[in-house]
Length: 178
Ligand SMILES: Nc1ncnc2c1ncn2[C@@H]1O[C@H](COP(=O)(O)OP(=O)(O)O)[C@@H](O)[C@H]1O
Ligand SMILES: [Mg+2]
Image 1 (cartoon, rainbow, N blue to C red):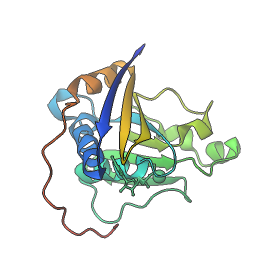
Image 2: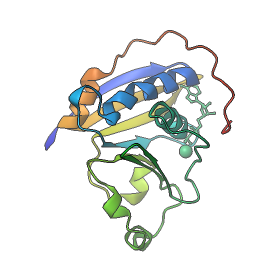
Image 3: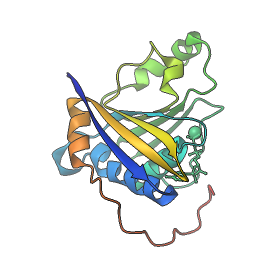
Image 4: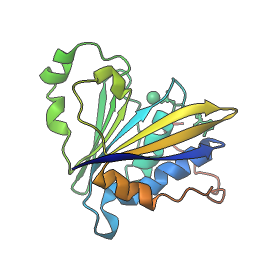
């Protein structure tokens, strides 16, 4: 169901803040509290704005283990945890809509999968509106994130996001994808 867009802008002073915001999405897309699992998130912003950093932290918080590669060359990396599918797209190098159709990507935009798309504007016209768009912009040494809900599911997520900065998290364990 389409609803009027609603916005929330947050300042993310450092990468830990980006990751803390991403972690807030894990229970929302993972089906906690009776929400249907799945949903589509579009990530916009310049190179280095933090789209992949956000996605990695979200996938990690959803239980994905091992290396989480950026799909810059492959266009798509996919994962499965329990019965939930995760599709991480990056359309930075996307040029030909036939690529999209030939690869059967359209079939992956299911409501019961978690779909994260970097550079969605490069596949404009091929993508339905996401549940939520997250725009990341450079703001001093940090970033500003603007969250826009485009569906009822996205509004539910937006209402659940805590805008205040989280307490600093403890140092992360060394990980393979550093
Ligand atoms: N809120 C933030 N403030 C400052 N630096 C950040 C923040 N979030 C992420 N970063 C850093 O910015 C870079 C983002 O890179 P990446 O996630 O690959 O960007 P993108 O996928 O948008 O091109 C990383 O070096 C990361 O450490
Ligand atoms: Mg990226």
